[in-house]
Every structure is written in C-alpha cells, then in structure tokens.
Length: 257
Length: 302
Image (cartoon, rainbow over all chains, first blue to last red; front, side, top):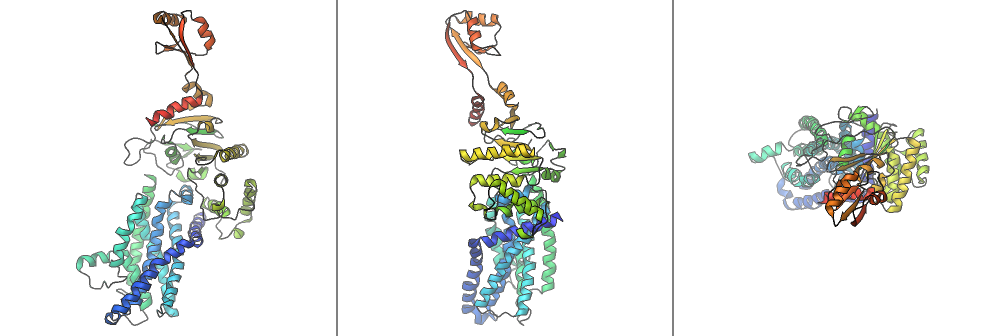
C-alpha cells in the first residue's frame, strides 16, 4: 500500500513540476513543431506528389511517436542528474524500494508526455492533418504504450551512465541515430543490410511504427512496416528485458559508486 | 572503509566510533576529510568498501530499509523541490515514508496529516505561506522547513550534513537555536558534520576526521586535552645547565634548546619560580581548541 502511494506521489511530483514550468512546456513543443511544421510541410510540398503518400501526415505520425517515446526516456535518464539535486536526494534516501522509484518515475514521465501528445495533435489539426475520433482514440492508447516503452528504454540507458556529463552526451549517440533508423522522416522499408540491422534493433522504430499503425490502419494507405500486434509483441519483449536488466544494473550501480 | 571507484586513496579509512542514543554528536573536519562519505554510508546511500555499522541495532548494509526508516537526513545541498509549495514538499515526504496514503490534493489528505501540517506551519511561523512555492522562502526558512520535514517520521537519528553552509551569520544563529529546541523537545540523536569548530562546542562528543582518519575523539574537554599542547618555552645562555636543571626538577620537556616544558598541571608561574638558571627566553604557549583545530586543518592544505 505505501509503495503504491509512493509511486503515485513520485509521479504526481513530475507532473506538477511540468505544469509549473512554463518554459519547459514551451520548449518541449519546439522540436515537434519544427519537425512537423517545417520539415513535414516542406517535404510534402517538394516530394509529396511523387511519394505516393502525404509526407506531412507521414512526418506528423512519426514525430508524435518519437516525441512521446523520447520524452519518457529522457525523463528517466534525467534521474542521474536529479540524484544530486533538490528533492531527488530525498527520494533516494527514503525507505521505499528502488523499483518503486523507477516505476513512479515511469508513470510520472508518461503523464508528462500526455500534454505533449495533446499539443502535437492540436498542431496536426491546425495543419489540417485529417483526424477522426477513431484515429484519435487509437493514437491516445498507442501514446500510453509508447510512453511506458520509452520509460523502460530510459531505465536501461540510465543504468549504464556514470555521470551527468555522460547523460548530456547521450542524445548524440543514442537518440539522434534512432531518428533516422526509425523512419520518422525517411523511408526505412528498403535499407542496405547494415542499416537494416541497426534499424531493427532500434527500439524507437517500434514505437514510431506502432503510432503510425494507429493512424494509418483505417486510412487504407500502407505506411506502417508491421501491424499493431507484431509491434506490440516486440515492444513487450523489449520492455521486460529493459526493465529487468536496467533496474538491476541501476540499483547495483547506485550503491557501489 | 570506503574507496571510491577510480580513486587512489581511501575516502574514509578504518574509522570507528560509537554514538549514544540522544547524544549531540559532531563529526568535525576540514573539506575533503570524509565527512559526507561517512554520512552517506551511515544513511545507506553508499556501500562501504569494507567494514560495517549498525544504527539502533539495524545493519546499514543488510537492513538498509530499516535504517532508512530510523534516520532523518538534512543534506548539504538543499533538498526541497523549489517548484512545489512547502506543504507539497512535506506531503511527499510523509507519503514516501509511508506515514499517510497518497492523495492528489491537500484537502483530500487525511485529517491527521492536515493537523500535523498546521502545527508545523505555526511552529515555523509560516502559517500563511505554507501553500506558497518554496522558491519564495529565505535560505534559513528553507533549512528549518527541511529539519521539520526530516523529523516528520520521528527518526531515531537526525543526520545533518553541514546544514549551515552558505547561510549568513544571523541565519546560522537562529537555525542553531531551532536545532537546540528540537533536541530538547524530541530527544532525537543529532549527528552533525561541520567544518566550523564553534558549531561543535556544545556537542556531547566530537569526532575529528582528517584525510579519512579519526584524529581525535571525545568530549570537547577530552579533545582539548588531546590536541592542545600547553607548554612554556625557555632558554638560557648556559643551555646545558638549564637542561640538567629541568631534568633534575622532573619536568617533561621536548625539543630544545630552547626547551619546551610541558605544563602537565603545573602553572607557568610555579615552573618559572623553580628554575634557578638565569633565563634569556620565556614564552608561553597555551593555544585554544580553535588554534589546535586550525593546525590540523592547515596541515591538510599542504
């Protein structure tokens, strides 16, 4: 009971912090707005006719999946920076289990991803991306799955980081390559073998594809690589591995500095 | 003992001490002496490389969770969440320690909790500001709030890691009075680290740490006896006669010439009166505890 309360209180704090931090709220929309608004719109204007698919919609769905996934992953990774700041010290010395901290943090960062989901979808509406109620519900559910999956990936990365500096550099080495290997802006259906292997082991790819499937499954277009159930099985398997290995390594590294 | 990964020397090296229940204990030492490492090990956030400790009968390694429940910690760096209100900070602590079940708002928390918060706010004189962000509080007020929060779960031991670092003198003083009051009313064992000697003067016992080792341990008086060397420095033209005379009189001397005659309970006056060899130099050396401590501290800078 008290562990459940602790999970909720940790999640509550993350969400409250976001709501009170206007700068962060705005900053979190900057990337998706640039990607969708500028890149998506210009790709569609330039190559849209030849692509056989609306590239604005393609980028919109890809960025939505990527943003949610990355938001929770980054949120978890930030635990390493947090450990020595403000309230996180409190959390680390409280009598709750380390697993509770991880779960609370994943729940909290997933909640943090919610307003981002909403913001990006609203931006899609502004850009006249066609969206019906059925699609919205599917994309909302997909968002929840993707958020938790991103959190698990964050735990794995977190567990292998030793310092705040390493955490700051993680973007270039871990996130950026996945942008292109996951097919957020570019087709990845027929990649050369080495890239194809890298793409298939990029967790972000499945998050993006799952979100795309939620959008395209009723449009008649075939943009997604796998169907929802395949993506779901792969993500579930990765989720379990990331959580078990990540939490184990994290808890061990925490006390043996 | 603790050696950090990639470190060449031990941060804490074979230290051993006991703290009695209800005691005001001070771990004193210059920066880098190993104070924070010691506190981190005792509060279970760091594993010792070897050795162990128990707090109120619980082993810090095998029963870490029990230890965490028994201790309160005030960190060197502020641990309040600046974006949250004072009440939210307190609420999160209370829930993390399993004192009350979680509720999303203050109004939905249990009545007992709200009663405790009101009382706490009154005690700190922030009844009107309890729902304001901690960001708007002064440094001293934040520290007091942290102490109150640290005592919420009624810990057996309250650890304070240099709680006055970065505070101005008046704020330090009020914080000190506050802590004395806490000790009187709760009877909690206080375990304080500091590099300010004056903060250790009221302690029941002091442990002086330097370069990871215990330099001195005991009551402030013991420490003084241990560290402070009182002597009178004397010299004469006829140095051999003076040396012989001092030996004959049975005084403990060191160095020399000039000779350092240890006081060992004698007064300077009685020693000088007893010496018949004409003296050319007489200097007394009776340093304060602070001087003795400074000698240790300055030694580490070399």
